[in-house]
Amino acid sequence: MHVGLNLIYLLPGETGGTETYARELIPELQRSAPELRLTAFINRETERSRRTLGWLDDVTTITVPVQATRRVEWVRGEQQILPRLAARQEVDIVHSLANTGPAWGAFKRIVTIHDIHFRLVPEAHTPLMRLGMGVLVPLAARRSHRIITDARSTVGELQEQLGVASSKVDPIPLGIGNLARALPLPEAELRVRFGLGERPIVLCVASKRPHKNLARLISAVALIPAERRPVLVIPGYPTPHEHDLRAHAAALGVEADVDLRSWVSAEELEGLYAASTCLACPSLHEGFGLPVLEAMARGLPVACSGRGALAEVAGDAAVLFDPLAPDAIAAAIERILGDPDLAARLGVAGRARASGFTWRTTADRTVQTYRSVLSTVEPAQDSQAGHA
Image (cartoon, rainbow, N blue to C red; front, side, top):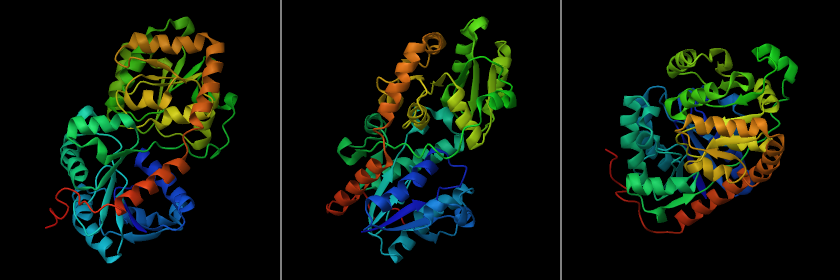
């Protein structure tokens, strides 16, 4: 079985969860099904970084001559050039790993749709990106032979928002990666370096985007009385929305209690996981929720949104709250901060739950999808259209 992997979207170090998906899934596919022949279709930026991406070492790569930072080029590469290159390589399947994919080609097409934020939380994207995703994601959903999602909740969202039959979708949860990528920075050094003092730390690993609901999290921290208020640390890539968040914290008088950071080193992040009292994840919508899973795998108690995929991942191993209610967020955080026994139980329960999410299982089930697609003769809707 020859599988082409559509990585035209990938900008190493800048693509977030979809990069994690590719980085963890591809080597596991090779271990899980060594009979697979894998060819990755990459862009020019990825080609320049190729030697630093160890997870592509044993995969044949074909460079699609486009730059993904130029959206028009990216779309042209995916919709016009990739199908021809894939046909030339005689692939049996093209698996597109990040929400969009080619609409035609003499091969079976599978797309992983991680989320439909462009419909459910439109503020997560710029107007231009929202417009583009509003065309390309439904197109991929229609023209693919199978769809993979990270969570069962997304199956219903695809059916409701895009009219996709649930029978066409395979929900395949993500796994938890290697937790030993770096030794944690010692807590005393971490607290000095970040100026955190001696207060309890509440961690929220999130990009500074509106749908992450960080403004309500900051409001929740402001509701906790000053004498027992934790320090909130939010590492994640910066966006223009960060200015609004800083202004919001200042308006509430908690700017000294909120540490908005951009990227941190692996040692610093591990240090934060180790030193924090809990992780708070108030996101309004997620396709899966890797930060919740990664915190639970480290034994860090979690308080998170009770909506959709986050509740699905957390199960009964976290304190769930209404993400629209700052008082509910504050109460969930205070429950963990004020009850060491509860925190200990959540730490144990979280580790146990996270152990059930493995990339080997993700890979095994993905291979099952590959085989099911090759065993069927039904074409995807309009499978040969749109290639002019």
